[in-house]
Image (cartoon, rainbow, N blue to C red):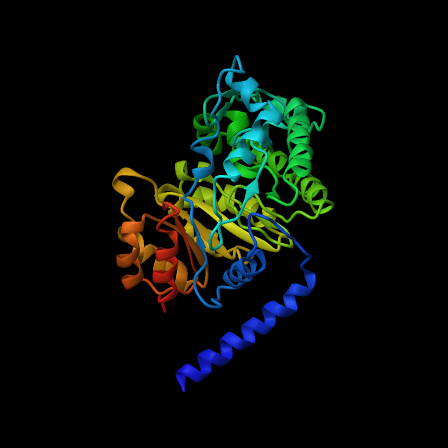
Length: 381
């Protein structure tokens, strides 16, 4: 009887997926001939369901940033290299040709000028390094908040325009083109003010802090919709650095700064921002960066629009993954999907301890062993 009920539930969900596909459009990628089937598994995961097996991405968190630059001789500075659109996209395409995209691994180019580029839309500068950039705070006095205006003519916005337009042209038929990493809210306000200073501000200047937070969120939908509409005009989906596409609107909220504050402060300052940030989105996966942010998990789980959690356990003492199994089960019991980074050697133990429902595996593995990993995962029920 249980098997029959399960069979009927799966068939019913497959029918729902087919109905939902009325909003899909045709996407043909030379690098991803099984794109539609992969999207069915991803859409099932968005609904905390499984069609035939859990979705799998054969790359780990931030792996796309590990080898950004190859040829260094043509640039005199890191910034020059980051801002060389032709170089960036040609390098991406050269790497693309070397890869296979098995399972739910997606070919995605996302224009990247660093994690704080959202803050830089309002002014200020960033210092570039090999694989990341650092933003210089610009709000030294509270009266400077009034000078924070979204500037679609500044060099960061215009460079993202160039990167996006060139990628749309050069990646046609080869890769999805996504939107850049967007961090409004607490992370943006902390970048403008300086994270350590902003911790003090929440204690000593709560009213001014809320004013700064309001400024950090007020243009988010204008910014998001601008890039979303631009990409969809060219048949691209809603997708960014995490590599999960959506035919609707996909967003990855996060609050890395929240690792520095108490749960009570998060409820007062962070939760209202998060609730506003996810309204109107079709698919939301919260980027939960380590145990410092995980102390706010009950508040994060209270936001109904958040369908899933991308769990980043960290390195060093925060490895291996098995110590986090109770936490992962808590997320499952809350009805949320979970993206989990695993090493190949951790897979057997993880599958023995964890129910597959709601799991999305991210495994960094050599292409030669990926087919065997998939065969193993197909037996996980």
